[in-house]
Length: 105
Image (cartoon, rainbow, N blue to C red):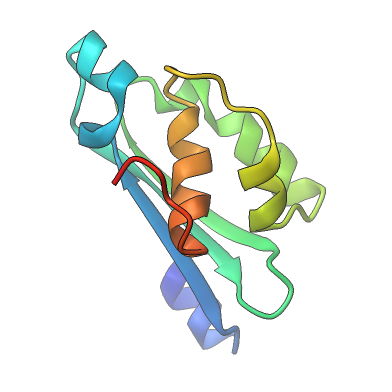
């Protein structure tokens, strides 16, 4: 779901966004343009939607597809292992941003 569609469906939302410009891996690879944006249901924490723009985001989409399929919560994403430095770490950071726990911003 997009943020707009989730609001239209009546959800209260938690939104988290993490720019690749704050990612050590993106900096090291010279691809700092882009971001991860995650949309969560504020009541239950379920991942409702995601947007990823940037170099090689197709390599990260599977994590969010599985998270959505399993009705994963933002806190579950935050608490799962995301090695450093990796691009997938941006998913964890975006979730952490939604919950006021972002580390690298």
